[in-house]
Amino acid sequence: MFAISVSFGVLARPVMGPVAPIVMSIFVFSGAAQFGALAVLLAGGSTAAAIAAGVLLNARYLAMGLALAPSLRGRAPSRAAFAMTTVDASWAAASRGDGTFDPWYMVGVSTPQYAGWVLGTVVGVLIGSRLGDPNALGLDALFPAFFIALLFEEARGRRRLVAAGGGAGIALVLTPIVPAGLPILAAAAAAVAAARRRS
Amino acid sequence: MTSIWIMIAALALSTAGLKVAGPLALGGRPLPARALDVVELLASALLAALVVVETFGKGGSLTLDARVLGAAFAAVAVWRRAPMIVVVLGAAAVTALARLAF
Image (cartoon, rainbow over the protein chains, first blue to last red):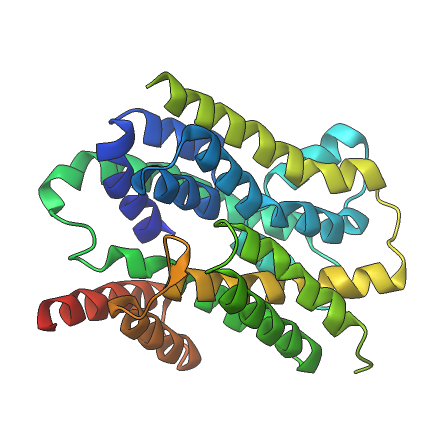
């Protein structure tokens, strides 16, 4: 996480200035949305397109929240507070593998990640100008590396592998056709299809 | 710069809304078995799509570049249970070296 947030600071600073990337990491705290929105801006897209890309990339939190919901007890503010700590890695780590989650474990994983995310962004902004070209350093490869690591932990068992294969296929087919972010949303259809299989 | 701050505010609010919508709307009631089946599989499907988009996607098209070698290194490193720092730094280093070489 730290290496990824440093690279976000490095990549975002020339586009957003020195303060905005740090504020974004404090209040958004989502690698996919932050990198997605940044990529749209870097490609010359509008602010609206960058927002849409970020929202689409984060739509998975709706599904993740639905999965998490039965595991959360207590009153609404308490459930909302736990839900706010959801990030990909902590959500996956807190999954017990039977559809339920350990909310406190998720908080425990998210808290150091949040600190590392914000601190890494600060470090990235500060040292960014000395690092040279981020692509020459291969920093753009950090995202596939990060998602591969998450996928390896998550996709265990036949139906999850089927869902992963379907999601990858949908993304391959749709990426050249539909706007950025949508192929990731559409991959949810692979989960629906895989759920129909009897395992 | 105003547009940058609008973007940050919009993404902060929407992210929070997406995260809390499920738990607040459901109120801790259990999901039907079939719905639970689907949500249990969603992470695998979405993460695989993210791997594809981040490895091969480039401005709305698919491409083969140095990232593929970095991602391949990451896949092998993850499979061999290397620490996360080795996975990400190795992937970046392989990608950087491949860009130098070609």
